[in-house]
Image 1 (cartoon, helix red, strand yellow):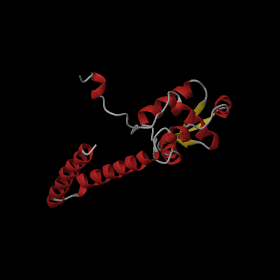
Image 2 (cartoon, rainbow, N blue to C red; image 1 turned 90 degrees about the vertical axis):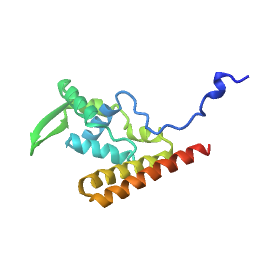
Image 3 (spheres, one colour; image 1 turned 120 degrees about the horizontal axis):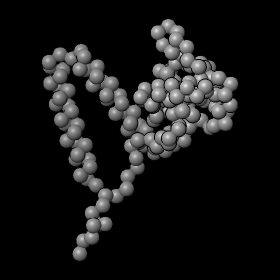
Image 4 (cartoon, rainbow, N blue to C red; image 1 turned 180 degrees about the vertical axis):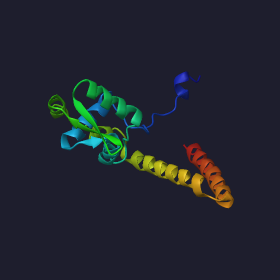
Length: 160
């Protein structure tokens, strides 16, 4: 007799990194220990330091910066069309007490999944570029390639 437990899929490694609550805030503080930066620069630097595994969204970075500004940990200043942030004395004390989170976040994703995520991101970049500049023939070729790729991915999954 087959039990419900027999129908479960085998466990698989995650495709998304494990980012704990507060990691974005700590990462921003740690980066601002080095030099003043704007939000975009901090997003890019977190992505670089985590090997492309972790790229926090503007929707998590800018509210965290605003909250830290309200708490007196950072000061923001408009400059050249963007807002540059720097630590206050209190912010420096907070930042000194915490470890850099990007290595731990990067390690939360198995190494073989790093490349898979990077390839997916690169494909996304190519897709966006294609939607802006491709002609009718190129769009038709891309559709054919995507249909074929989708079928091939399901074929790979069916082998297991």
